[in-house]
Image (cartoon, rainbow, N blue to C red; front, side, top):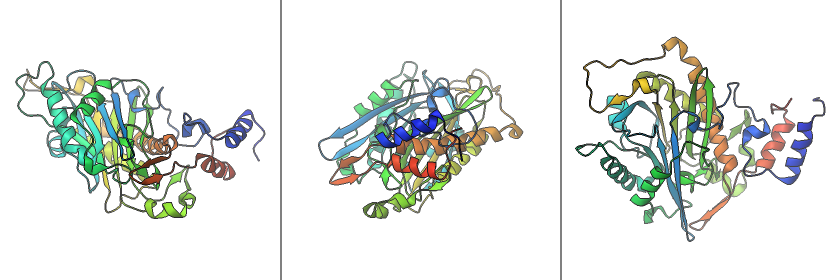
Length: 371
């Protein structure tokens, strides 16, 4: 039996009063591996990475949005970054996949939105890129646009996302704290039958950082701290919990990892999804986009040399980065659930995860990290 501690008293008070929406799973000592997090425990702990959200909630039907992820604050087309994509299950509409797979680099912001917003977002990213200073003669742009289908809570057929919304998300992108839950591309999403959304986390590996951002909209059997929580579902939710859905996962690092090993890094993020209970079901579009911001490995649009001098972490030293991707992905998914709030839209209601019940069961099973 654990001795009495200040944490025990604090925990009891939290259970009695209800957990605050600002508190993240880590604040309750839910275990997510042993690696340390970055200062913000967010993808923006990776130097240079920026995130912007535009949230669209209009009337009783529109529940959607846009999330933009920028690998650095400069002209990405002129300074491309090494990148790779791992396709966990391909029931999705990821635009821009083939060129990243072929050339191994990323040349635009990554934009996440809803399924039917992909063409609009792609056009907006093209216009944004063509309009940047230095790109006046550019004639080909590969926008990278990911999606999940928020059609239960959102009137997706009305296609409410506009090019202006995408421009705004890119323009608002900052390198500070990242808002989670019912924001941006996660506004109308559902995860394990509960309200999903945007989540993020990070891990330190020596002098480098691995950061993850997720857009959660998938099913399976929810696990938190290794404990199965599928039994928490209300009867009306159970049918939704097992339905198909998708997850977009963005993995960023400032470590000098090139495209071949970035794809290996991306693969490990799927293990984090599985650890949280995801199963990559038949109708699920599960994609992982991984990129490195290492300045020494950026790819200039116009090369002045026939040889690129690049640096790379050897294969034998990659294991900690793989672990970081697994742990941060799992935590980002659970963060999205803890931050999300009950939402009504298009004649449906999806409840928020009952955090107090989760914490109570984890405490009963002695699965928290409190000392």
